[in-house]
Image 1 (cartoon, helix red, strand yellow):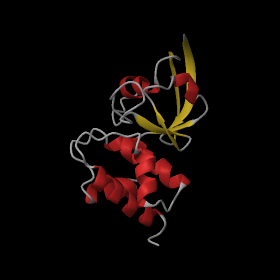
Image 2: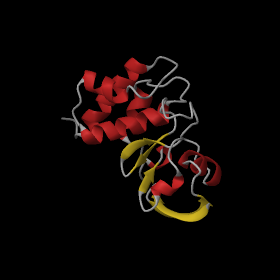
Image 3: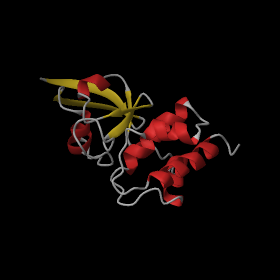
Image 4: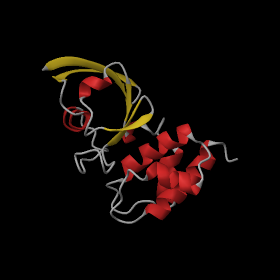
Length: 158
């Protein structure tokens, strides 16, 4: 059923009339032209479709768009501010924590959510926090290292 869905998208008020049962992934990609999040498994297992919903990582392939009513959605496109990359984006680039890049947006947004909850995660805590995101290229070691670098920068270098 079509309805008006209002939410904040990457810091901007957004309103659109859509079939409220469509998934957020397809509304973002097809209706709003944001293609950072990817379609992977379609079952919420791989993490390629991850976005932030009120700053918590969620799988957009499983989330009906009606569930974002009145909430804040952040995609990888909205993480950078004023043309400046977020520390996680920068750390992923500087640590070669990507190969094909398909999983990268989901990895970064999941790491963002993890670091919000735990700004000083240990190596095992990062592994545990990221286990729901799959990388077929095998860049996991560099991904964890990039998260460690970003965590330090986000804490002000301490």
